[in-house]
Image (cartoon, rainbow, N blue to C red; front, top):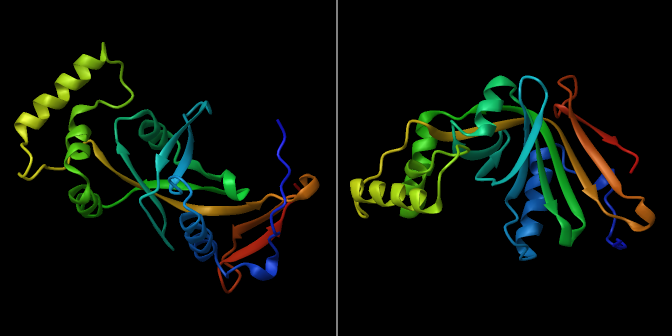
Length: 210
């Protein structure tokens, strides 16, 4: 079970001044390649004692302020972020032999930003946000489906669905962003932006051994 990477390399000269612009460039290429859900990312958190947990969520926005995703604020990841806001994001673009690894801190997005995104979600997803007590134990699938039906009856399709008070977004402000490109002989290219306020761009770039 071994893949041989024969992709073109990644050099310092190719990089943009900052990681968010470089991410936009790679994300555009990932989307153009028809990669399934290029916005899927692994979010890793840790509780106050350092025990880690990971799960896949969908990136819903990014700009120079950071990377945004939405979740139930009572979920395990949200509880862990409340205890320890340092997180890691991983974009595993395997067919392109590429990865992007982000480390940084997460904080809640403003309520108005959450509301604007929630209104744009499909009806079923809005009802699901009310019906599911994310990360808690449920007795059966039938119980979960029944909760959905109760919420759908309370908020019929075509009528406004309010934002649940326990639901919203997080923005991860990057401290480091690594761009990983697979190369032959396991000599991969790993270029990492590190925040550095003493530079004009606010970032310095390091090359890491593979």
